[in-house]
Length: 406
Image (tube, rainbow, N blue to C red; front, side, top):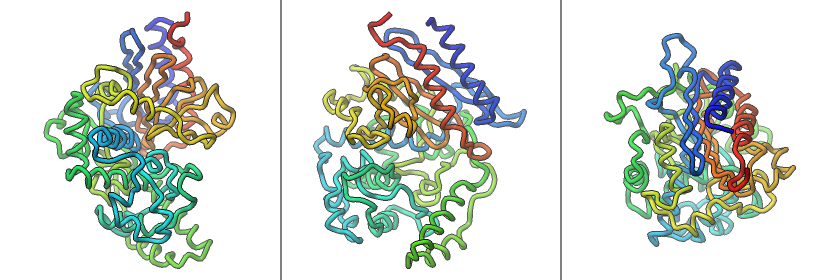
């Protein structure tokens, strides 16, 4: 299929999401091996008539893409610099992590377990209603009991990537945002990628796509968490209830501040699990680390190949190192669970999604990388995003033949 036909398919896909009010606008970039890039911008940043159209200057809250754009490459570069090993116990670098319940099991948690979401840590906790800062968060995570033994299962965990961010700051003696700028963004030419974008004078001309009005989605998550504590008569329930009742939630539309409450309230906007803002073109520069042999940031090719390979056996969704891995041949269990990259990916494909409506998927067999940025959390979280995302990936990847075929 020629470039114009593929561009039309991408435009139709974005327009379908806009028409269904899943998001007000979006940006898509498709990179194909040996061919020119395709870039599409559709819609506006919001639903008001005076909201700006999406352009190359539009910045998006990447949400969990932070995990693979900041934390993952920094950990791998740390391995190359001899500052840690993927088999290191987490408590080697963060002794406080082993001071809570289940010390012997937590001492078995390795860096690779955090990267593959197989540590046994729970997925999410509303720590932000209790306190803030690295030391308090480290204590809160240490106080959590594991929900399974390390390596036994896969549960996607923000807590694990918070810990990885803490590890990075400890071993480098440098703040996470400064470290990312020095080792990844600046060498890659990523001038529009940052934490805390409102504090960056160089980005004052950029338009930032708005997020949710207030934080009703996480407010409901916090209430559900409290209900779970009540259901099992957890003695911590009263402490959590008092903290939730006293908490002051954000009002008005969130724009330029990270949507994720743990990152915003708890970590001051900078965390290993969320907080990063970027543009479509900057992310295309970043993905050269994973798809090109001559990227300015050099990733050891053996380490890179290891990082994009599935590591968690038959667990679904399958996890690579940091990345989500596709299922071989559209494996039924994976399709039933709903791979965020859709149904047409090869077994070599890898990717990740962000809660705000962002995603990156790359398929070496097709020689293609697809970057999609939307703000499906504006003005409320739209739960139809997952279905649209899978359809979008199917439509676009379905236009690209595997490399070497006609």
